[in-house]
Image (tube, rainbow, N blue to C red; front, side):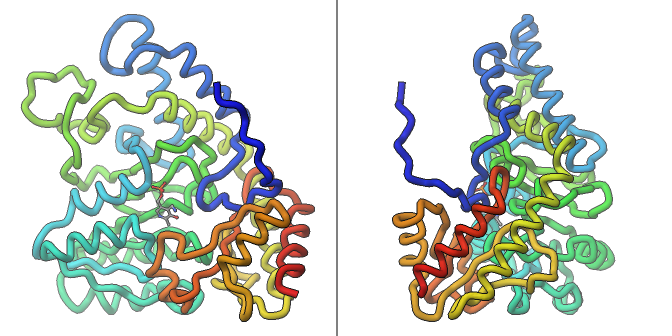
Length: 388
Ligand code: PMP
């Protein structure tokens, strides 16, 4: 067995990449799945396989309840938010389509869109302002120029924490005959979600970030009105092996191959954790990120990116210093203080270009489960000491 690494990380502020640690309930549920749920869900009617299928069914229902959805069959388990983004884009769009997209997108959206652009999809990028906010009026102006198949926008940004006006974008898209496709990687778990009300036609998210589930599992909500092409085909567990193509019914249509039962069961436990403690956790994260923002903003030479402190953001922010390089700062935070942060472009050159940090990047801090007031104070003091 691997021994635990002798880590020097004392303060974990990389929750926007992956939250850690996880609530004990998540770990216990995964342990239960690994030790008790041996059968392959949907692949047999013997007792053990039925238990696995039941656990997956319950997890799907609990995730759907957390996301404010009706029928849980419209919630697809995917390996990652990236996979979900690819499915909604590549499955729906094709040559001749026109799409309007905000300029703060992560590579999970930008790269498949770039690939689609090479095959004849017209991609119109609407610039966000310097806080990272995409003005719905600008989207409306862009959409009115020509018939548009989809508006694409993230719910919240992974660098600036900026929250987009998704409900307004949904109205604009629908009034103009377009679909709204949302990358919710930084939204779910941090923002109270009611997908029934929000109006997105597709919403992809990660399980391992704000939702506090394990890595290797994500969620994709698809409204009943859209029918993207499945990206992969194979065994589907729906007992229709004779059919030449994937079944039409959900979720099986989009879940080819043996699914990640331990990951799904862990995510289900995370959803139940949020249903019970989510409001408290949200209040705590909001307070900590505000504290971090205020502390950093007071330091000489620091520029905090994104919205001002009084505007709500998800619990992530990034900053640069006018003299100390972001890579050096992040490295020193780790080496001298055991504080885990992330420097660079955070898989989102579009965002950095929008907010003017493409050349040098920025240091990102994401707060979450397990962080304390004392840790935030210590992180601010550490930045002050390195940049003094
Ligand atoms: N979109 C955004 C905004 C993200 O922050 C991330 C993760 N960094 C992703 C998409 C991709 O998520 P995953 O790595 O879980 O596929």
